[in-house]
Image 1: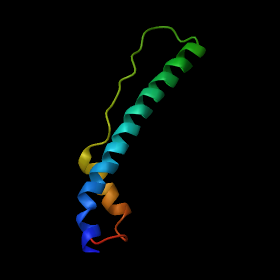
Image 2: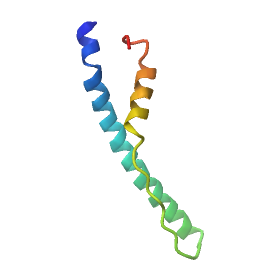
Image 3: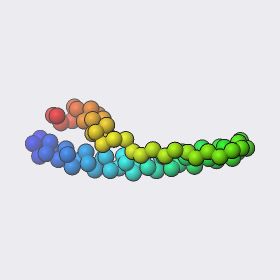
Image 4: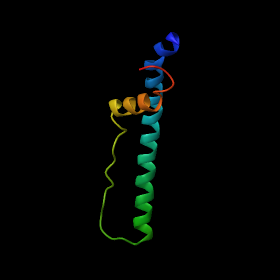
Length: 74
């Protein structure tokens, strides 16, 4: 249990990196789909989809700690 608990910070960092990668990919995909829907609907005018970054690191960490609260002590 102690070694498992010691690995938590590394695990959180690794999962956060995956979350960030998927967030970046989903933002790009959503913007592309939105642009395609505008074209399909023949919407006129210019619009640039604002891109957002991944969730804040502390938000991801708190979510991971909440989701695994029964796996190891906090």
